[in-house]
Image 1 (tube, rainbow, N blue to C red):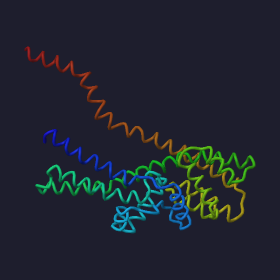
Image 2 (image 1 turned 45 degrees about the horizontal axis):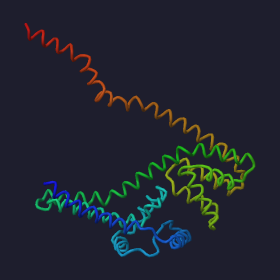
Image 3 (image 1 turned 90 degrees about the vertical axis):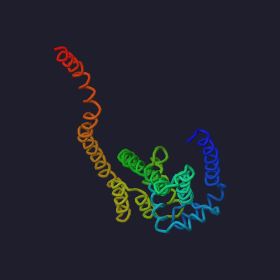
Image 4 (image 1 turned 180 degrees about the horizontal axis):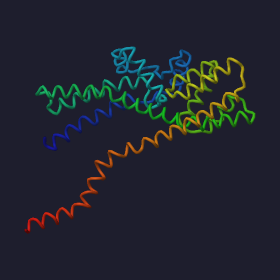
Length: 293
C-alpha cells in the first residue's frame, strides 16, 4: 500500500482517537467527584462512578453484564483504583478499543476475504480484553510491591507501638511517612475509620482489597486482638518475626531457581557464539588443509 494512503488513514484515525479519548478522559468538577466518592463509601461499593455519565458511558454500561462489571471492579480494587482509570471509564474504553481494532482491519481492506474478517474479529476481541489485561497486570505488580513492603511496615508498626503510640496512631505515622501501595492502603483504612466505619469493617476491607496471604493473616490477627482485647504489641511481634522469616525463605527460593532459569539463555545465546569463536578458526583451517590435499 502506498505511503500516501497510510498517511491519509493516520490523518483520520489519530485525530478521531484523540477526540474520543478527550471526551472520555475529561475530568469532572472536584465538588461532584467528592460527592460521588462519599456516596460510594456510604453505599459500600467503592466505585468512582460519575454523577453525570455521558451517553456513551450509559450505553456501554447497559451492554456490559453486571457480573462482568463486578469482576472489573475487583480488578480495579486490586490495582489500587487508579485515578486515571475509574470503573465507568474502563467500561467505556473497552468497546471503543474493540471497535477501533475491527475497523482498522476493515479500512485496510481486510473485509474482502474470510481471513481478513477473521482477523478483524480477533483484533476486536483483543481490543476489548486489552484494557482488562493492563489493569490486571498493574494489580499484580501492586500486590507484589505490597508483599515486599509488608515486613518493613510491620517492623515500623512494632517499634511505634512499643514506643508508646496507639495502634491507629502508629498506622497513621507509618502510612504518612511511607511510600508505596501498602502505605496508601493504610492511609485509606484510617480514612474509612474516620468516615464512620468500624475498625473491623475497615480492616476487613483492607484484606479484601489485597491478594497477599501475609497481609490477610496480619489483618485477621489484628481483628482477633480487637475482639479479645489483647495488647496489639503481643500480636505485632510474632507477626513481624514471621514476615521476616518468610521474606528470607522467598529470597532463598528465588536464588535456588536462578541456575535453572539461566540454563536456557546459556544454551541458546551464549554457548553457540562461544563455540563459533573458539572452534570456528580450527574448523576453517581443517577445511582448508583437507581441501589443499
